[in-house]
Image 1 (cartoon, rainbow, N blue to C red):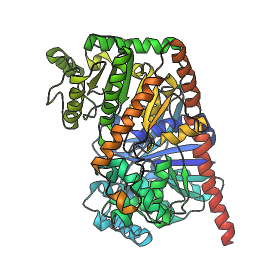
Image 2: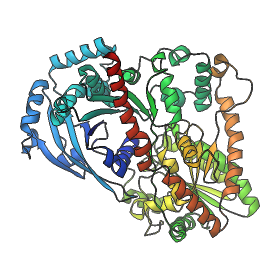
Image 3: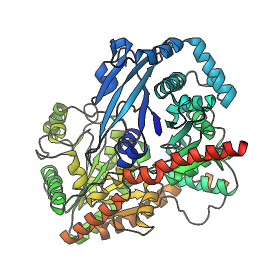
Image 4: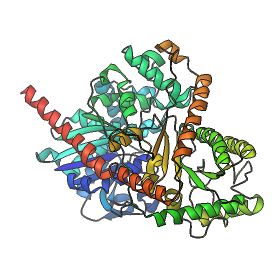
Length: 594
């Protein structure tokens, strides 16, 4: 019997990658066959409306603050609430995978700890320092750190009260910390040392590494060369980039060395975690890839969706492109959006010489929920958005201004290709204006795309980059994306036309030791990006399907690859065996002690 406790800030709402992982795992038939009970642990704040607190597909079973107790849960939770001075919300959350239609249900356990008993909090701080060396006093100015630290002990106690695992030798309980947010709960499990209770750190990224990649102008070109050279010299991140303990996120994930296992979503994340300190050199770090959507569509479906994108392009630019490219992403540095423009610069020449044309849609925004439909229609009618933009709300803000500068510069001089920057959340007429076909849906931008870009500088896995794979799109990714390793597993290491991997880290000779690679900066990266983007453009041009037969071949092959990268595969071949290994290691250790 397995109970898996997922501790995450996305317990109630799907915000980003972790929410996608939860949805994919929990709705997987293999996960459901192997896990008897799933409990999502998160937080809430007093005064938050119930619908906002729980999400749209949830059911409330217990909360004193709401006067609800359906099932006599008060006897379970009230002693914990009184002991810590916290409030507990308990209920159910339902999941539905849009691609497969599968559903799942998980228990929902939320802790409100704003007014936690100060004596209890001080005890937690003292324990986490004495047992694991985390100096909470250094991080008290960070409300996020204190927030999740408060959750750990009451969340653990509440889960144990729900499971009664101390009394059931047949039930294994796994506390899974999704990123640093759940580490206080995982470390509480380690502190208590119950025989059938295990802790796992789920590394959806390496929080220590991300800023070193994003904030240095050498980006991935510098960091990964530095990491690889440092490892050759048996050095770790502190040896080459200085002490990292100024960051509470680093402090928390560094202590994952005390967990029973670390699950890492990509090959590079495995290496990044081992780079943190010598304690991770031989730590039980297991590769657990993310899954991707897998849905079979017909050639007719593909062409129907593409026609909508072509019609939208004609409405905006007055011509019908032969090819439509897309990049659906968040507007952050790590996504490397400027690399799309670099590739298109070289591709434009090839398309023009062949008498072909293309449009690239960049769907990304800095506003979480985008503009309202009325605002989109006003911009469209006033000055032709999204073909044209203006600085200032409701249009360009922050990084959108910079990206639009790249887009305008390209469009000004290109001959056969154009870029449309859609700084909106959503992909439908009510969200994007009246020039968009009336029956356009978000799935059309996935199904109809000829190529999806995703040449990130830091991408632990990259689900979005390969989401359109089963729809016959060519996925253009960088070599540091974690999904590259999974693609290799799914294809037996063979190169396939459906995936193009851009190598922005291999510089060749001249950088032969830690000192030399640490000096890599903008000049080296700029040179490599120009060289690689030209190669990527040539590969993409060669692989773009020329007729229905070639489109059909892309569809068939893409679906076959995606089937081998599904969430069922992830659950069956990676996640569940990882849980079994944790139990087996504990039993072997116990037998050795005996």
